[in-house]
Amino acid sequence: MKKRVIIGLSGGVDSSVAAYLLKQANYDVIGLFMVNWDSAANHDVLGNPNLADDLCPQEKDYDDAKNVADHIGIPLKRVDFIEEYWDDVFTYFLDEYKRGRTPNPDIMCNKYIKFEAFKRHAQNLDADYIAMGHYARIEDSKEGPLLLRGLDANKDQSYFLSQLTQSQLKDVLFPVGHLRKQDVRKIAKEAKLPTALKKDSTGICFIGERQFNEFLKNYLPAQPGDIITLEGERIAAHQGLMHYTIGQRKGLGIGGLKGYSDEAWFVVGKDLNANHLIVAQGYHHERLYATSCTLEGVNIIPPGDIKTRDLTAKFRYRQKDHAVDLSFENGMYHVVFKEPIRAVTPGQSCVFYDGEVCLGGGIIKDVYKNDERLLY
Image 1 (cartoon, rainbow, N blue to C red):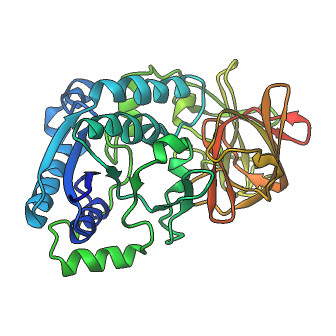
Image 2: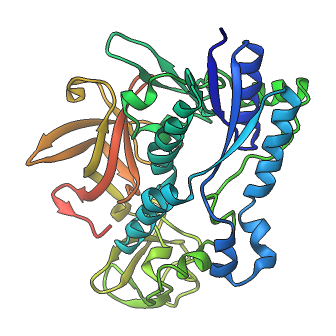
């Protein structure tokens, strides 16, 4: 009997090619389209139903997924994870912004939706495997499944999978993980897949690619305050600390200030108690560089003590690897950087690697320069 694979078919080219490759490999393939956000919510939140299709295009994505499924000859089922997404991802997303941090909801979506709720649903469909269109690889070892970077370094998505456990990685297939993006596009065109020329999506699915600040204001009322320099001088007003992140340049509305140079201004800190956004001039301002951080919510994928490994870490997606040392003291993981790193941001993920193997990661809590805790 053929092995059954339930694949997350999103309506994008990557999952389309993944489904096509599985079908070509003679698996019994069933597509599953996940509905994670109630499109009607955008009508209420934004007050303009005419923009809903642009802001949350999941119905268009479903049509694309259905066309792909029909083209390659597999069934497509639609499953609703709206409640799970709200409870486990969106609530987390809001809570992080309330704390003045910059969250990464995609990581939690993988942890709680794509590799938990989805996997449970797939098991009810008698799945032998689940599959996703992620650029990542899995290697079986005596220690259990290991998560590896995708072959295409520019598209590698292991960073977003760093909160998965070995149990979640068991019986998972990543059919495009060994391919480069250009090869995925080529396969899609040769197979005449309906999504072959579809642009990659960006942004967060429930918000879309614009009006992020307006969306956020409907859930978290903005609290305007002062933009100040490191010396404490007020130079402008901000629209709410939740709208800014460490290292940000755009959207500050600062320029041409008398008594200052023409260098660009950057966010170098936040003071939540005083509701101050702290800025300084220069991309490489010393205040943007940290030497260590602490982590919470740490997930280690392979068994054993990873602190003994030759570790590198990423502190943002597509950031280069940085050499680090990891220790565990007073119930907290501490990451010490071999060289100062720019714009290490609370709420983002620090993800560990040993060569090609993604070892897991945690959420950045506090950031330090030498022994000084920075107002990040």
